[in-house]
Image 1: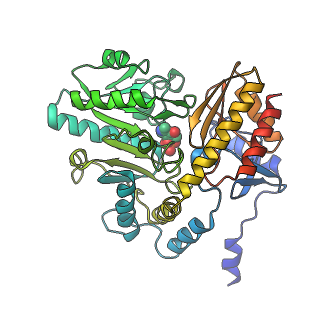
Image 2 (image 1 turned 90 degrees about the vertical axis):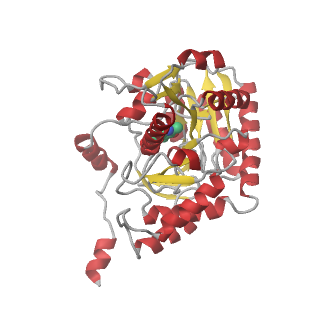
Image 3 (image 1 turned 135 degrees about the horizontal axis):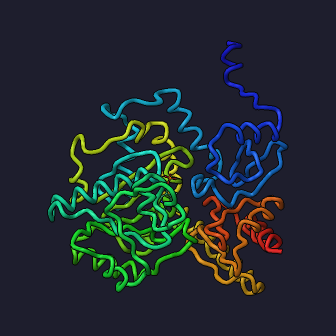
Length: 408
Ligand SMILES: *Cc1c(COP(=O)(O)O)cnc(C)c1O
């Protein structure tokens, strides 16, 4: 069928300048675009229109956890594309049901609600926590407490949960029911609590806010306090989940179990998927009709997620990630010792931030890109590294050498 053949091949606009112009004229300008068009990806590398290779230490912001176009994920998603793309959630599909079973089991939770993004996973967590608290303690309950420097998403509720003024500018009125905790101390937590408090939401390691891990002592204290007070503890593991920290979820490394945990980013290895997981007692607060999503738990994304889970739960996978963690951490510490412009190196697993003395993180990202390495910032003074979990020791060595050069 020649027509089909033609439809299956896509001829892009001929050059970079044309693409940049179309984007500039027709896409709303919410992104500070990098001057780079990515055409394809393979493993830890992506390629531009001239077939120039870049070592990708962004993983699409912790999304392509197994690198680009992992053959097992491509095969699973392609098989599903040829079978069923979408059906309403009023019907059952096997990939969604099986994913629910495997995901709850490896996450140490009982039930899941599927959506398509991190913000949606957090929206569901907020709704679930409020319904639970109102039902259990009374209608006055509803406040969600979050931490300074947090990032929970861009929808109107999750951006209000995000305790960073720069994300909230010019979009008021913001919804009520959110209060902020200034510091990672129990004194600060108690100062934000009122009789309306329903839940405390926290990223075990803050991502966008600067790669800031909370100490496991603090998370333990927070857990005990929430239990004592009847507050739900919500972990936003949208960025730290799906293996990023060398365990399926960061809480499993820190041994602090939340009541609700949210995931998205790498869950389906690059296809959009969000998940809100909860214990049985909490999950009961959702009953038929109280929440929903058209695309949530889509069978194609579910097949990709199942393939990803098969790979990361295979014996030895996380041992390998932790060996790479030790290597990357060791090399970054060595780099920091040699350079007075690095003030801190923070992270866990394969999620690291290099905090610089001055606010020149984006300048370093630009230089590294020109040298063939993609990096991210996390705030103005922190360079963020999020390599795919399949990164090799050699690739880490090359990346750190480029970071050193890019620092100048
Ligand atoms: C990226 C991120 C979100 C938002 O996810 P989207 O898919 O962009 O809506 C929420 N929380 C954390 C911790 C994130 O890193």
